[in-house]
Length: 124
Image (cartoon, rainbow, N blue to C red):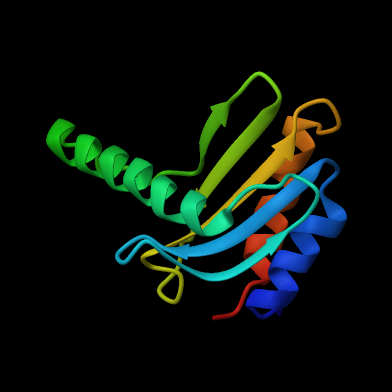
């Protein structure tokens, strides 16, 4: 099991191309933890902005009557990938992991796989 800091460190060190990671409470939009790398991103701003993305998707799913859960949300930019992974389980309710990747160095399939494993080890 891993705490917040350990989880973010694992994301940054084991996922090739990671340039920033955060654990975010999407009820408040506040980051519970951030770890940035060479990306130069303001992860507090990213946490707040991506909270809006998660809320909008959940609202849309509700309006559509979808009873499914979000596995992840992927935003592709010309030079970066941004992954949003809402946490499952009773302790992770209302939280999501956010990971920014350098598109030129990252393997998206491997990053998704590794982030899933890292999430499973997180203990809040």
